[in-house]
Length: 261
Ligand code: OAD
Image (tube, rainbow, N blue to C red):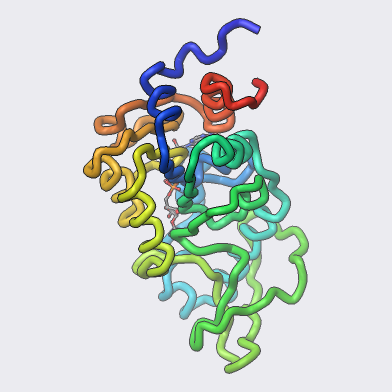
């Protein structure tokens, strides 16, 4: 096969070979090729079709719990149907070739885990970990949910097994704090890393978007993989333009890390 990794800079490969602690910071773009919509892409992003304020805030859940629960059940059904793609698999494989690798994701799906990544920190929670909206007790889903129509339908949230208050999705909503344990562990990993990949994120949502900046400030090499420009372009050491499921396997192949392209 002809050289398919001509766009992977040698300096990046050198940084990868020398890296001892790697952080892979991901956003919705890493799951795009698994069929899970991103948030801010102009035509296909969730926030171009749906009103975030009406679906992803504590106020929305208080006012219309059935609309919000139904919308998240639709997204959960979509995530359950989705399969990890070549980017998730390449990230899991990369962990076998560097001394230490932590995945820090803004995604609420579990595709990194299903691809085999062992250390995954979820900054924005999970579609698969509902909890009580009052007493915060973790809850189980009654059963795997059947397919939901596009955008979901109104579904009354179940009642907490302990206190009977409505169960809420285990995700972080606008106006809420990130789970402290996840944030602290991500921050520690980023402070200590010598190489950070920022993959498939618009790098617009804070505090998550602070992580690549923190890595830059502590002297790490920062590599961005995204088909579109983001505010991180001006600061990253390397910007690889393209889909994560295309670039990541080529990067591993170029590094000699054994994934056939
Ligand atoms: P966004 O939708 O803001 O950004 C997705 C990014 O992925 C964009 O920069 C796209 O260019 C890029 N992208 C699209 N397809 C891609 C592909 N195939 N490969 C690689 N990149 C691709 O999603 P996030 O940055 O994850 O928060 O958004 C951050 C947070 O905002 C989310 O976690 C969510 C949202 O509101 C909460 O729900 C709390």
